[in-house]
Length: 321
Image (tube, rainbow, N blue to C red):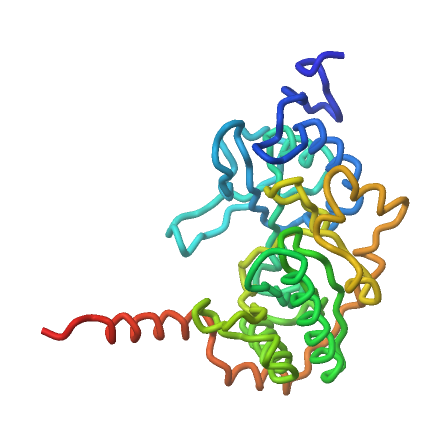
């Protein structure tokens, strides 16, 4: 069977033996085979959630696609949402099945970024997410992110909550905390800020909540801004990075012994076998303590605080007339 004649689940797959992107050390076929092989694990984290993807056209820079293109097949489910940033309605895809996933793979969609709310309930968060971003790349930086993840785990335990952990597929770590379906985005955001602040207080020499990079002093940024319509890389999603690493779930007892490069489109399926560790490790939905929401409500929103601070610093640098 030639590349141009290959079909799966009714989806035509083309140019499968082309390099995926410069430095990928992988072909489009590798991407398709990996995503198809992991479909039963990745789709549960994508379905019913407005999806943004990062695509790479051959020889071009990667780009994020939110609005589905005009040539999208009619069988790809979509939902229209108002995008405040662009002041327009955006038609997002919902990747609910294998056929849609294969279509995205054939479009050279490498990264999959679903929202933390579902299309049916955009006013209710399903998870808190702490994104732990070390200052630099490399093994030492990832180890710092892991240390920060353990701080987040301690902060969660202190208020009776549990989370699951995965590599981001880049240089950091994500902690997901499943919550019941009764939490509006503003309350979830407040609780996330409170957990981040508590983690920072546990070891301020390792963790920081400083939104502005210049203020982080080589520490791990505990990013608490993933709330509302925000997206985060899905578990099992590849990344547009050399070697095509994968965001991969890891048990808390094992996170100290892994590296992001351990999990790629070439190796990740071999680590899985018949298991779905993300589903297995995810705690049951939890109710957020009202005191935690109240605590976080008193903490300024990081982006807003950084915007005002940036303006203040710009004024101080401006020469007086």
